[in-house]
Image (cartoon, rainbow over all chains, first blue to last red; front, side):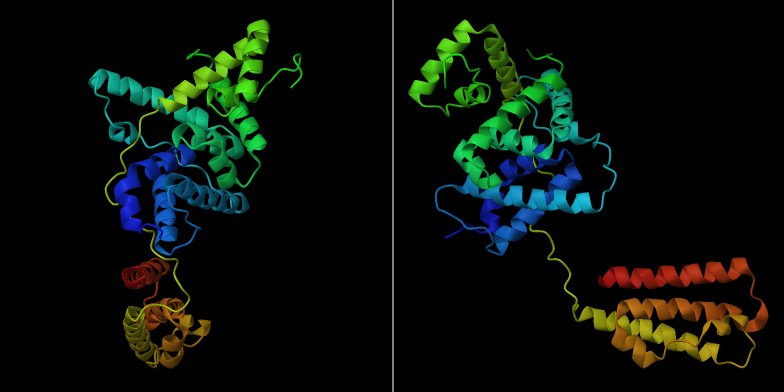
Length: 169
Length: 167
């Protein structure tokens, strides 16, 4: 039987919010996305198969995200600037405040690079490298063949690396 | 894959453990002999590490709950009370409006009858309040544009608050 939304929030709240934040790049949009996902969970939407909770949540998240993207394309709105308070809510690393600050600044750069990716590549790399899903689950979430998942992940990473200017290389 | 073909996407799949042993062996020998693919491998490896090194983010308080269900066309019982309030405002204004004082604003049309306002729901009620406020500003013949619009704005504001409280 599918978990309740309370169980999902308790055990996978951070997972869900982190994936939503990386996908949308905006705390307000991430909140809306998370709450829409929990609404679908509450209503029993999305076929649940036992043992694969993160794949299931990621599939629902992808569907809601793509619905939003399509809606936005029909009625474009300006994106709000990134939330300056975001860095404060990033979990501090255990290595100390300076490292945490550096990590937050670094995260903001990386987030901008993710935001700049076309949606199909953004979804693929976020589901792979943030959600940590196997390719088979990503293929299911995106409703494309595994070969397409391979291409998108690879292309997404290459674009991301270009956007970061090779600083990390 | 032929030995000469550049593997491209398979490089990422290799990093992710998504290739079988035969493909992995082929990729190893190709990248050992092909500097371009060796460089490509290092570049996607770097991007992958950056992404995987991003911290998890704690959801702010209040985020982890289902979205409010999309508003149905039929609204909750409280709306009936709000329609009653709007009806009261509208009928009060209508009483004022029928005082025998010449009012240019009345040319805009009669106030919406109360029964119509209650049947049509909050939106129509709001409209009728706005209409009534125009009528009222004409009473007493002291209408100036500024006063009329500020009164109208106040009534509109109050009506909007009523609607938002129950919305």
